[in-house]
Length: 378
Image (cartoon, rainbow, N blue to C red; front, side, top):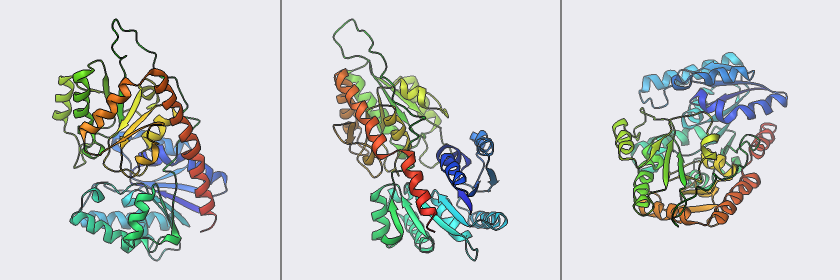
């Protein structure tokens, strides 16, 4: 069978779907990637081809809203599906899912979609939300199967009549590669001259977007440092200037001058930074299942996240971390203060529970197995 992996960036394919592509190839299928190149990560296309897969370059703007350009993107995707003789599309990201369904019209190929989160268009209820829901209703009725990364999102689609119970299921996010992300000891305790709690590092890994709760993290850091100035707070992730909720460069600069947080930039390998952190934090407004929390948990780090769809799946409160109210810096500060004051043995035990939870519930092998089973049935 000829299978196309369709997503809105080559970065997404290279970082989240290469192991699935390898497994499909091992099962006897021919696999290609159809995705736009990413100017900020030009090497990701090379990673796809180096793994032995063809990368079909698809002109698409992730944030584009011009109707003519978007129609052109659909037609461009249709041309690739036709020219490659694709039998089955595995689609990801909102535009990847919707545009694949449109592009398949009158083509003899099927589609399995993956809803990895509802994105900013579902966080607020407005005209854009209604438009996106209308597009989902138009296209998802024609999709053969839909994977959801959390049950909250699935229930929203079911209640809105966007998918049927019989053609959808929840899978554990994108899964985490447990061979790549392995438990590491917490950073060594730093000796202090006084009885003050040891310095601990709280790390937020995400694109620098308002929807990821970056501003709440900074404000909570200010609150914690009032009583515990030795605590450290770090941001790791891409500055996404083309996103409407992006953190402005001058805003980030002001935080750095203030010294409330440090910015580590963007790195393709996050493991060294997780290894130097005591706790990984994600105060996002909504997620599919955040890969960064899965990776940090697999490396044995306690987690703090907001009690929202996707994030809540990764934490068993009191065992491997804590949940707090979204958009509430005070609640986040309370959770981080609690983590800062936790005895080291309890912190280590919480990290061990994180690793165990990821091994039991979120291994990438489980996700790949579900895909292979479903591909065999379409």
